[in-house]
Length: 244
Image 1: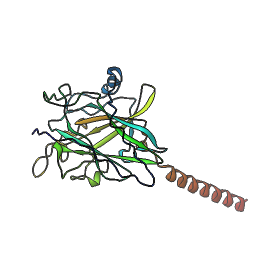
Image 2 (image 1 turned 180 degrees about the vertical axis):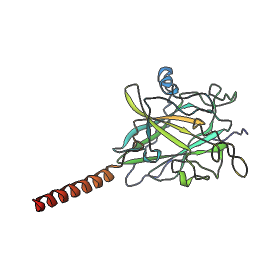
Image 3 (image 1 turned 180 degrees about the horizontal axis):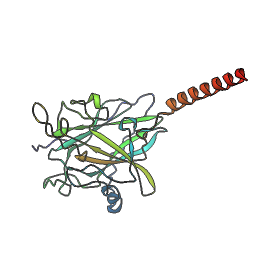
Image 4 (image 1 turned 45 degrees about the vertical axis):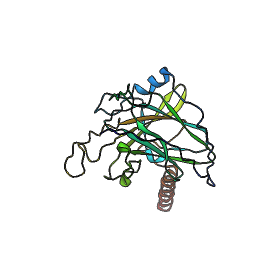
């Protein structure tokens, strides 16, 4: 199931909270040593990203809280028979193409005519203020099917994107993996595609972006919990005073 797709660039419309500047003339490529730092977490086909130091993040929370100059995303590897496409959206704006044919002669599943090199980068532009990033995988370049970070919005209602915080080259990065097959692990029949759920069908790294660690409450939730705790503490102290 291989097909070729034309690539293109759609320039985003500037919004009140985020301003986009094109920087596409700059060719981006990770050094071999930097690429290896990320690729050490990518396992053989049918195995998920692994690394004791990886901190799992909520993929729906990825953002540059204070804006970013020259946001960069890099292709690390891919283990897919599909020729997938990757899109991005900023602050829920229109989807824009990053790469239209994610395949390489040197990837986990090698494609002799794959147009990409491992470590190849793409500039997402520059933004001011709180900037949320959303990524969407188009399996086999589909014009109608997209897999993103919000599980309930995916065609099968399942998670198709994982994100991990990782330190590389002395900087904070987020390593992201996608699953491109429809359905639960091993499921067949109907639209199911006997997915292996390995989340290595497209693996990318993004410089400087941040997210909320899985299992850690948002700051607003923490404040609410602290408020309840303080209230209960005062109530107990009041009761103790009255009993005395």
